[in-house]
Amino acid sequence: MPDVGEGPEGRRGQLALDWSACTSCLACVRDCPDWCIDLTARLEVDPGTGRPRRILVLEQFTVDYDLCMYCGICIDVCPPGALSWTPELLVARPARPARR
Ligand code: SF4
Ligand code: SF4
Image (tube, rainbow, N blue to C red):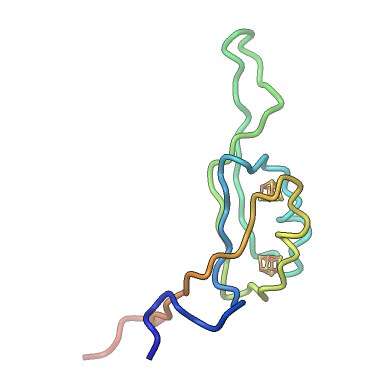
């Protein structure tokens, strides 16, 4: 029996995000056929002028794996290549506490 974290070669596990590369452009959110990516970002305030700069800073990025089809479109459309597959397994857990 394989350990958790192993699996067939080429298997898609989870989406990994390189936070430093993400520009919060929303391309992945817009092109995901299942609308399962949720992203929030904020405008940074330029301390020099006190005006909002047109640079978005990523605050939160989540994927609803109950909806995800593992199609990889989000990876393909990401301009800076901030998304990739990781072989990590999602471990199934009960939707509600188990009865005793
Ligand atoms: S793999 Fe496909 S379904 Fe899953 S988050 Fe990316 S675009 Fe959406
Ligand atoms: S497409 Fe890439 S750069 Fe744009 S928001 Fe999604 S992960 Fe970030």
